[in-house]
Length: 348
Ligand SMILES: Nc1nc2c(ncn2[C@@H]2O[C@H](COP(=O)(O)OP(=O)(O)O)[C@@H](O)[C@H]2O)c(=O)[nH]1
Ligand SMILES: [Mg+2]
View 1: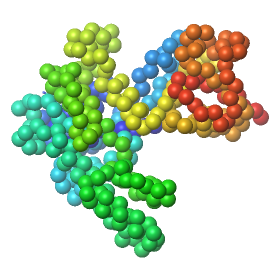
View 2: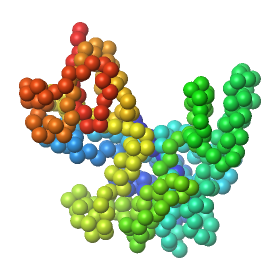
View 3: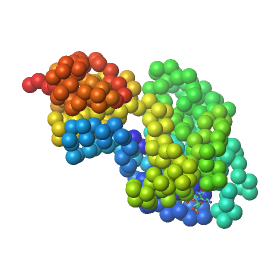
View 4: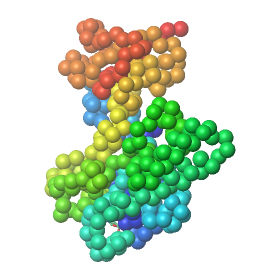
């Protein structure tokens, strides 16, 4: 399952955002640092209208969404890589995630202390990333000290170390294929994609936050979003309209994370028993996708039927599209596309 870690300075609003995303308040939020000692994790369904429509079209009661796990990782402060503020433990949690949601504080509220007197997203961004970089440098240095590491790899690690030392992220390094293999084993924090979120006050809804260090800042009003997520769904629309939100933070952020990771969604309607959404990386073949559904589907794969969900909405249920000859028959090398509805045929 896709794992997204929420990272940022204390009191940036990470736990508030986490609560908004997981929809059942679990994390304590308080106006002081280090409320979050244990990490909070929550699994959410990826909002998906296409899936709901597919279920309706096929009269299916059982709908299984793709899922994402959010982890609320406690606040990082300067010196975290040396263990400040339980920093090492928190940094360890970041190792396990696929993508970092970096929350920057934009909202002003004197009752909520900030690490420095001024609200300065550029500075906050730099502090947190500096800790990630320093942690990575430590990881690389530790590897370089190991006896069994080949000289070739050591030479590369030295270069990478120099690169990070200039304040750059490992993910921007021009790796060769071999170097990419070596670096994979290190689980570097700055190798992970980062989506930057600006936690704004209500007065700034609709404003463009521009960029920080060249990264687009996605505006989210965490407190409002937490209120929104606690409402019964019948009241959500009206609330969003009232405060001027076009899309919930959950929907928006998951969509952006999918884009950043190159993830697409395909569907199965399992002979009318279950409508299900699946997430795979762009470029995944149908044979690989079949293995995700069931290992037997891959082992005994013969061919597959494929049609776009959008086409089914014009034609009718899958079986009808088959009868009308509208469904493509594909072999194992077919590359799955966004919105494909798939049925795998297996042999004995
Ligand atoms: N005024 C205001 N307060 C907020 C906003 N978002 C979070 N807070 C408050 O800031 C404090 C710290 O938030 P929290 O989510 O615990 O921060 P964390 O340390 O990053 O997890 C809490 O008292 C929140 O209610 C916001 O958009 N506006
Ligand atoms: Mg917190």
